[in-house]
Image (cartoon, rainbow, N blue to C red; front, side, top):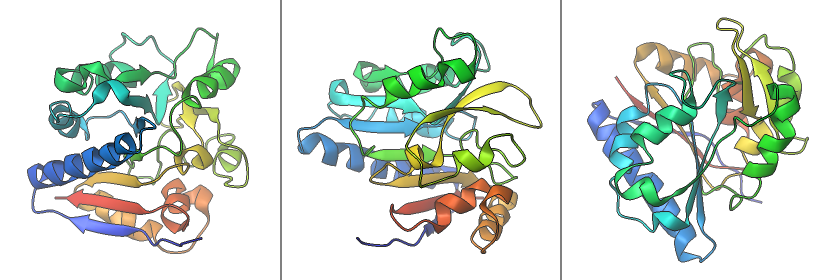
Length: 235
């Protein structure tokens, strides 16, 4: 099996990054579509990818054969301002991309713990390995809703376990959440981490040093060598 070392691409500004990353995502999806198996894209919430979503929404693809889901979600109504699903619907699932198939993580269960199995059951129906997984990263090194110091984090980062959705809680903003575990996030053909600013770049550099993965969950992503990971950065 080939091994991969995490790459880094630096851009002069956010506009150049957006254009390059949108093109790379579209190319990955087109490869999946050309193989006749449909294509799958996994995306985060947050403000950083909004410009990318806006740009990607206008790319001409066979979107009706593309499936989109989330890396993680707050356990809130999809119409809520804090919902990742709402953000993706408003910025990505429009224009040409309005024809794609979307699978959300929030479901009818009472809480994330009881809804985790149903969440993964829905996501598992997407074409896998996922054609492209896009992630953000926090200043603390979290990815998706895999936060340092969260209960259950160790299991969520265990690459020897099965891919799954898991219930998580963010220590600093204690919303109940549902997140793909690291095994699910790395069930992919390509992974990108989108970061902006000097502080995030410094976090990325710290994460590349050997150390406990639970201290910086992104470290587990960057140091694994089974799936190509590229960090896209602009000031």
